[in-house]
Each structure stands twice: as C-alpha cells, then as structure tokens.
Length: 112
Length: 112
Image 1 (cartoon, rainbow over the protein chains, first blue to last red):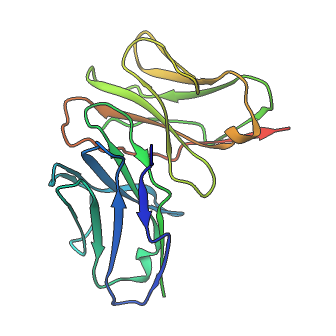
Image 2: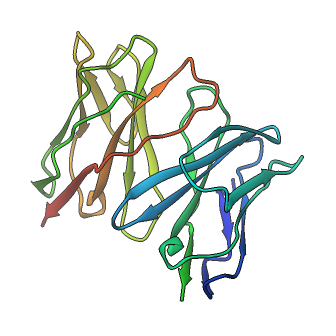
Image 3: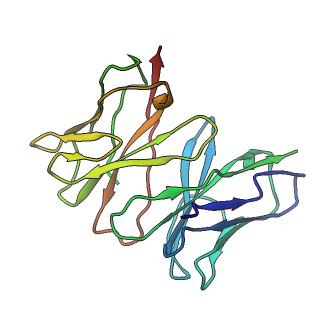
C-alpha cells in the first residue's frame, strides 16, 4: 500500500515568488492536512481538508492557501514568498474520525 | 485543544524498556490521547492512541492514568531505531475538523 506522497522533495525559490506543493494521500483517505515545521516554531497546523472542503485552518496569513481535488489529492500554495517561509512542509492523510494520520516525508522549501 | 507537558529529553539503553511520560491535567472527556514520533529527516509517524483503557500494538503500549490526567508511552525494548522525538497530543473527538497540536515533544536518545 503506497504511503503519502509529496512532491517535490526539495525546492528553492526567491522572495516574492509563489510556490505550489502537492500531496497524494493514501488511497481511500479523504482527510488531508498540511503542517509547517521550522526549528524555531516546531510543527504547526496549516489547514485540513475533507471531501474537498476546508474544515479547519491554522493561524497563518492569507498567503497560505490550499485545496483538495475530488480524488483527495491536495495542493497548497504560498504566494509572495518570504524568507521566513523556509521550512519543511508536511502533508498527512487519514480515514477521518479518530484514526491516526499518516505523514509524508515532506517538501523542504528554501526561500532565498 | 488541551495542552500536554513532556520532558524535553530522555536517555535509554538499547534493549531496555522506556517509559515516556505525558501530563495533560486539563484533558476533557472527549479528548483522545495520541502519540506520534518523528525520526530524523522524516515526517511524524503514528504510534498509538487511546481514550480511557490501556492500549497495546506492535510498536508500543499506552498506559493511561485512571483520572486521565497523565499517560505513559512504553517501548518494551528500545532499539537504536527508536531514537526520535516523541509527541503526546490530545485530539477532541467532537471536533470534526481534527488537527494535531504538536508541542515540543520528548527527544529520546538510545545508547548502544
């Protein structure tokens, strides 16, 4: 059974650019969440989607957005990149309810 | 989500049991206790979760205090591959838009 797949694994962008990260959840998982991990702030929740609807959103500026497609695949977008957006972005999928989340290996974004 | 308190770090010897404590004195009746771990250069990995009763799976055991204000993750025989940051997280089963609120976790070091 394939795990959660995130692409790309590494990305270097320039300040002011925008970026789109992709996440393919485990087959059958309808809940997809995104997290940002930095050395200073640790793991922080960005947003969660279930059946193409955003159910929950973390405390991040509007430059961070996401969406989920009918096949449960999800993308997150960051516009007008800032140096502080450099981080590991993790996607996690779940069947929903109280089941555990399966995380991908993440996309490491570096903004220069 | 209610907060959890964990020691910053712990050390263990290989092949010995490890007891990782977590305090959650403000836990509510609908909060599940989840444990995740994050190995170096990987995304978090689900370990175990429970509500009131002790739980066992192939990875670990979860012992929950009778008043639910604390819990302990038990690794029965630590291996070098168990060296990771372990996160204790409370998830409200009433919240449809589930998210994981990560604290600092406990960094487990395993000595050969």
